[in-house]
Length: 303
Image (cartoon, rainbow, N blue to C red; front, side, top):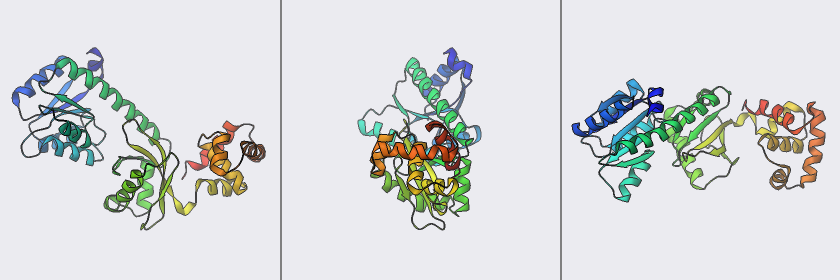
């Protein structure tokens, strides 16, 4: 409990039962947490927008706006979507559990709530949220055009550079919802592999995304690419004066691929890949693979 207290986390508890609110409030305050309470979903949304809690405990069954609807509304708000939501409910059917997770919840506690279990679950999700936020903050400062997308194609977090590129391409929030997200949903449904690319259709300016990785949360980390400036390999070719094949090899080196993997991608032997590298090093004025990748990455992050 001292670990929770030291971090001074702010918790929003949403439940239409005063008795439940009182019990949970006492448990959390005894653990040194700051607590906000709401009796229904609309009130919870207002408080969340105003106070930005670190975690939300949400009753599933409430009048007017139930917990599932509230969670979906939270996840649809770019400023609130990263806040972890733990559902609390007396419902125990599998479909209710699935419904809560599909709405965006990270965990599910069945009433009556065990105080020790509640604090243990919260500790895990608060730690995960901090790690995620730290990673996003670090990525924000790298100057890369990165964004996350949920398994159903919804755009979540994005770096300022990605927002700027979308704005330059005349794609506003409505354009993201109506044009990008349906195409992303179809693409993700086909289970793309790392480095697979999707070129968007029907946009004022040609844009694409490249899959960087799939996160532990299930979201996809993507890189937004301005296709007017060409692919990564063509950018390296034009900026560094390399041959097309050497530029492709360097591109995959920058993406962390081994000689064997590059050979499989480009249809050449690992020995041929190595010969290209022997020619690339003096062209770039470097002595090894790591330094060559660094040169390439400084160009590619500007995509």
